[in-house]
Image (cartoon, rainbow, N blue to C red; front, top):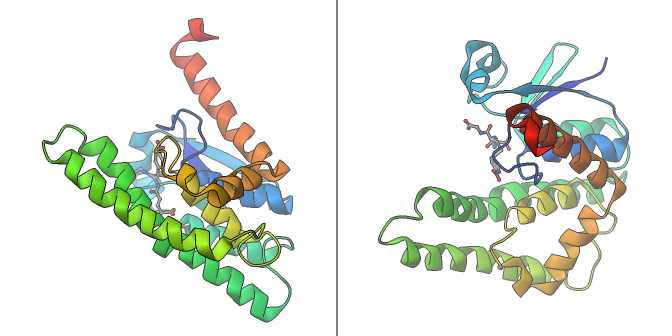
Length: 222
Ligand code: GTB
C-alpha cells in the first residue's frame, strides 16, 4: 500500500523546503518509495480529523495500512528501517547513524529553531538585539562542535545516512542567517546534501505545491 504523508497546503516558507515534510519527502526519494501527499490548511491541521492522527495538530504525518506516525524523525527512522539506503547494514554503524539522527534533532536543531522563532516573533521587542546575540552564540557553539567533528569528511560517519539527511535539513533552517558561512565545511556539507538527486526531486515536489498555491491565490503571477 502506498503511504500517505501530510504537508502544508500553503507553506509559510514559500517553497524553500524548510518545513518538516521535506525530511520525509527526501527520505522517501532516497529509498525510491512512492507516496501520496495530503495537503492541509492551517484550519485543517487543528481539526479533529487531523488531531486524531497527530496529537499536536502538525505536519508531517504518515499513514500506511492502519499505521499512523507523527514526528518527522520517527517517520524517517521508520522509512530507513524498512528500506536499504539510509542506514548501514552493519549493526554498530547503524547505531552510530541513529545516534546522528538524534543529535540532529535533539542537540543541533533546538538552538536553531529557537533563533528562527525569535527572528519571527520577537523582532520588534526592544531587547531583541541582545537576545539575538545570545541565540547566535548558542547556535555557533553547536556549529563549531559539528564542524570540528565533520572535518574534511564527506558525511558524518562513513556513507550518507539518515543522520546526514536530518542534519542537513536542520542546518538548512539557518539559510539567510549568515551563520553557516562561518563554517565552510558545514556550508559545503549542506550543498553536497542538497545536490543529491533525491533531495532535488523532493524539493521540486514541494516547490510545485507552492507554485500551485501561489497561482490559485493570484493567477496573474503565473
Ligand atoms: N517535532 C515535530 C516534527 O519533527 O515532526 C515538529 C513538527 C512541526 O513543527 N511542524 C510544523 C507545523 O505543523 C511545520 S514544520 N506547524 C503548524 C503548527 O504547529 O500549528 C515547522 C516550520 C514551519 C515553517 C517554516 N518556515 O516557514 O520556514 C519552517 C519550519
